[in-house]
Length: 468
Image (cartoon, rainbow, N blue to C red; front, side, top):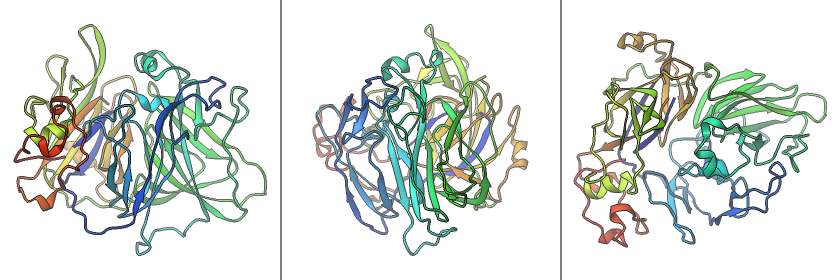
């Protein structure tokens, strides 16, 4: 199942597979996390705020893994798993496959991300896999984003009327800001090259990242190596991650790392990304979804919508409903209009079919006066085109099919093609062969309509067709 959090007119192509088959086993990594609200971290603008800390750390600890490693960790995913209740624990096991690069984790429900709970992820290449640049002398993680001085519950209810209080770098305030009791710093060796992994973990502000007197070579975006591009500054949109190489080739001195809010999500324009090294010229599109970001009033409340549908959160995770009862009593598959605008704005549980092993052309169209980011959870998409005005099938002639960059998150520009709320894509394989998909774990959390069942073996039999 894929979760879309949306933005303008952008074209993306993505192929969806319903099952993950483990071919190679790496190292087992066991991490024990204690996730709790913590008000003892006082470096946040001199305000004694509660933050979501992991093992007493804010941001949370680094997950440092290599391709094929199996990670055992307390975690859960909105729409896929039930929430972890207070004073309980749950172990989530996942394997780092296919994507080598820079990522970050964060809470996925109730705007908790604005209170912390996020941290960096590195997925390193195996020794037998060559990379396009020499091994750097050292690596540093930058988790940068806007911070709000207030309770995240209050902030989530008035995001249209509130501005961030500061930009934090790894949970620390700006250098020289009298409200900050600490700031971030790094030490590098003259003549050596370091890798900086930069992520925008914020909620509303994009930023420009630069290092005083130094150039940066962009080498990777969210698990995809790019054509190497040398820049003096880098635009990083909400949800995006980059790796850059920086050589300490200047006179020994203290140099500022400067992060400047370029715009919030109500202003600005897109910038072309460095191109990747993939070709999709031989792809046959199986489905095309035209997703329009709109603003509408429903029952007296203003909502952002996708194709005039505002996603209505439910208590039963869609993955569980799909597995156990094929969605019955939870959602109606494919009622959502994937290529048109619903006549009237409405609430809905938006779940659409993705063809197994097919390619989907995603057209993100933004008719709003604001800017946002589309995020495709669990997959990357090839960004093959963008432009002004309305998208038409003839727009395909302008696509870059030779070397499109691969992203899991992409920004959108004003009155172009892409923005919205939530949409889930359900992919299923009619072949019932259990070898194609893993069964639910023994410690599966149950909730919603399955709350009365205390163990997956006691849950209803699985439906003949289930998917992501």
